[in-house]
Length: 249
Ligand code: NAP
Image (tube, rainbow, N blue to C red; front, side, top):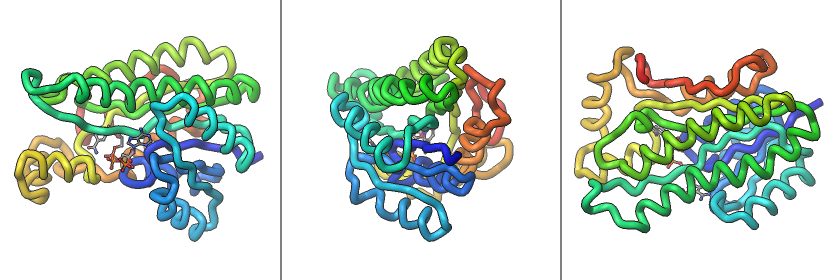
């Protein structure tokens, strides 16, 4: 039986790498992002490699869009029993400059989005008696200057993960979180641009603080997601895995 996975924010970056990896692992993959057309490249990569994928446009913070997206995935690929809550945005600023919109936007995509997606997908997981939820947290959950909103959301996702693990475990569903450190994506490129630093210099500076002496790639996170979604990880639940090239927490 081919299981169906949903990866949110999968048009690029960590989400795209995770979608490609889960397709290579043998799952049918729904590539979800704000704009359906932006998912085309990820879907094409998966299809070219012999996998099965569809593009789905949905804002994960919109309840109606989430319901429609999950129903569409069920029709096209079969009931989704794997969910990777990866969609994310940054609205960084020091606290005294952070607006209420900055706060609400970040909470909305990361926390409300993961809540809505998990609530919609758990119905299929409970029916199947099997499921996997992987939430993208961050080392910023431990606190990070300029990220009051983002760090609170990413810490919140760790609490959500543990509660999902407790509530859904009896239905054969595991829930785990991955907390990446510095990963080379458009998100870290945007951070460098915002603070006016060349990206290569930004990476070099970050790398000095990383024990393995390199920045992370999206594939590093995809590998961790692949493990959490595997059959063999069925006794691993409610965990937060820091994937940061060194110890955290
Ligand atoms: P990215 O390159 O910015 O990609 C994020 C994707 O999420 C984009 O395609 C974006 O679409 C999509 N998205 C944003 N809001 C959405 C919404 N409401 N509904 C659906 N999709 C939405 O980010 P990334 O670096 O790959 O990060 C992926 C995840 O890992 C995020 O949760 C991030 O917080 C987390 N993370 C990243 C790092 C890092 O160093 N990169 C470290 C720790 C944690 P648009 O392009 O249309 O905006």
